[in-house]
Image (cartoon, rainbow, N blue to C red):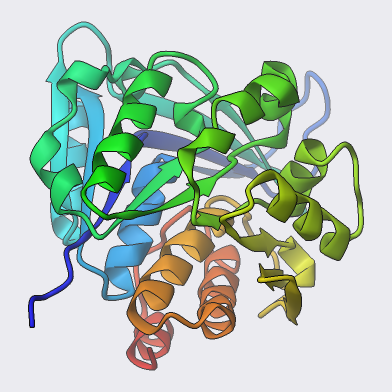
Length: 313
């Protein structure tokens, strides 16, 4: 019996400049806090968390031919993610300013780095055709490029039998793009697993607020998809074949919400692709994301507690 192919993620790798304040920062004021440079990018975060959870994972993205690009290669190699980077001298490797306030909530400003300029002609075909599953995030859809490349990647992988997951990425960016436009470029993808948070789900469903109603409406918009609705402090909701299962949150000790959704998506996909049980995968992913939000950064260095959680898969 042949070994299943790897999971492939296409999208953004960026470096997060993480700024966390210890108290409220007043307009024009000053305060103490932490300032850190950490690896990130929504797609890259998902790839790393899938790899940490034991899933063979490959990543396709675009970086600048600069020091941050070299560090990106080193970072994914350390995380045991096979990288297929397109390198360019025309643009710098992506960077994101991440502001985490004293309550743990985060806001981001994303620069237009090399990751936003991936073209269909630059896609490496071999890893896409060999993948068992492809994951995309909406950060590859809000502008074009890289939208055409992401859509081409989906078509190529699906032709070779891969399943497809999709994270809607940002309720604010969906609103700025326009819900109708967003749906027009995503509904025809044949998404198998949809991974929105509640705000994104509400935006896509005309302002619905109840999780079950949001999930049911999303299932009508994306009729092929298992809907995995992330509810932050309220946990998560699995909506599959018309049945809803609520998964409680793993913690309410919020230190930094950066990357929590990415850690959930990566660990959920790794577990689901192995065991094909969405509820069990959601419970596992909730435990992982709980560990993440109690620490700074999108993918903190693993400790004994995380390694123990990962061993239980």
